Amino acid sequence: MNEEDARVCTDISEHACKVVPGNFLLQIIAQFFTKLGDAIASPKTVLAWLFGALSVPGIFTAFLVPVRESGSLIPQLVIASYIRSQQLRKWAFVIGCILQGLAILAIAAMVLTLSGAAAGAAIIAALVVFSLARGLCSVASKDVMGKTIPKTRRGRLNGWSASLAGLATLGVGVVLWLGLGGDGGELSLFALLLLVAALLWFAAAFAYGMIEEEPGATAGGKNAISEAFARLRLLIDDVPFRRFVIARSLLLCSALTAPFIVILAHDNTGAAAAMLGLFVMADGLASLSSAPFWGRFSDTSSRQVMVYAGATAAAVGALLVAIVVLFPALAASPWLYPLFFFVLAIAHAGVRLGRKTYVVDMAGGNKRTDYVAVSNTVIGVVLLLAGSVGALTVIMPVTGVILVLSAMGFAGAWLSSRLPEVSG
Image 1 (cartoon, rainbow, N blue to C red):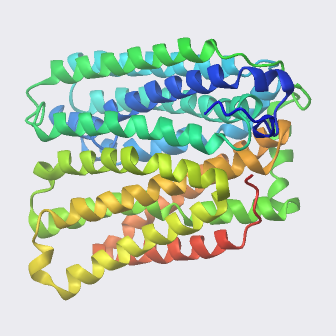
Image 2 (image 1 turned 90 degrees about the vertical axis):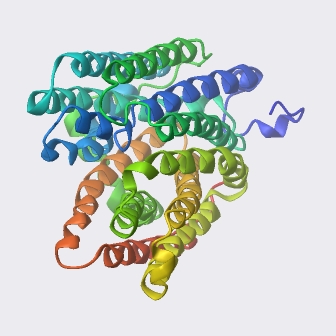
C-alpha cells in the first residue's frame, strides 16, 4: 500500500504521510483482533447458543442483537463530545478495547457460575457495557483513520481488515459446524473461547496504542449534552448528510434480512440448528472473498458501492422468496439458504464498507467526528425501530417480511445513487 507517489497523501498532514505504512499495518492488526473477538463472542451465534445451554428465558435472547448494536450507536453523540476534547484520540479506542475485554471476561465468568434468568440478566448487563465501549471505539477509529490514513487508502484498510476477519469467522463457523458445545455440555469450552476473545481485545488495545497520531484540535469540547443536541442540526442544515443518513437507514435491510433467512430455513427444512455452522461459515467466507474488492471499489466510489451492494442485498431477498413460493421442492433443500445467505453477506460487507468509507470521506477534522456520531446515533434508534419489523410475522409470513426489507433495500440503493461523489 506504500506507493511512491506523493499525491496519494490527500487529506492528511505531511508528517502523517511519512508514517502511513506503519499506521496502516497497526490499524489492520487492531481491527483484525477486534473483529475476531466479535466473531467468537457473536450474539447471533455463540451467545445465542450459550443462552440455550444455560436455559435462559427467550425474552433475554430477543435483546441480544438490539442491545449489542443499538447500545453502541445511540450514545455516540455524547461520546463524540468526549473524543473531541482529546488531542490524541487513539486513547479513546484503547480504553474502549480494554472495557470490551473486561465485559467479555465477566460474561465468561457468568457462563461458569450462573444459569436461567440470572445468567440472562447478568450477561445482558455486561453486554450493555460492552456495547457502550464499542461505541467509543467506533467514533475514535474513524477519526484516527481520517487523521492518519490518506483519502484513497481508507477503503482498502477497511477491506483488508474485514477480509482477515472473514477468515477468522470462517474458522469459528467450522468449530460450530463440528458441534463443539452444541449440546450445551461444553460450557467450559465456551468460557475458554470467551477468554480468548477478551485477550484479543487487550491485544488490539496494545497495537492501537502504538499508532503515531498527531495532536488534533479540541474545538467543540464543551458540555456533552448541549453539544450533542446542537449537532443534530446537521440533519436539517446539511442536505447531503441527511440524504446519506436516510440511505444508510434503508440499507439496514442487508443486516435485518439475515435472521429471517435463518427462520425461513427452519420453517422449510427443520434443520436450522444443524445448519448454524454453515451460516457462520458462509458469513466468514463472504467477508474473506469480497472485502478487498469492496475496499478498492470504495476508494474509487464509495457511493457506487452503496448502490450496487444495497441493490444486491434487496435482490437476494426478493429472489429467495420467489424460489420458495414458486418452487416448493427447492424450498426444502438445506443448501439453498446458506447459498443465499452467502450472497447476502457479500452484499452486506459492501454496504458496510461503502458507508464507512463514504462518511469518513464526506468531511475533515471535527466535522468528520460529528458526521459519524450523528449518523450512528440516528441509526441506533432506527435499528431498534426497524428491528420491530419481526412483529410483522404475526400478520404475514416470513416471506412477506423479507419482501418488505427488500423494498427498503431497493429504495436505499436508489437514494444512494443520488448522493454526491466524495471519493478520490
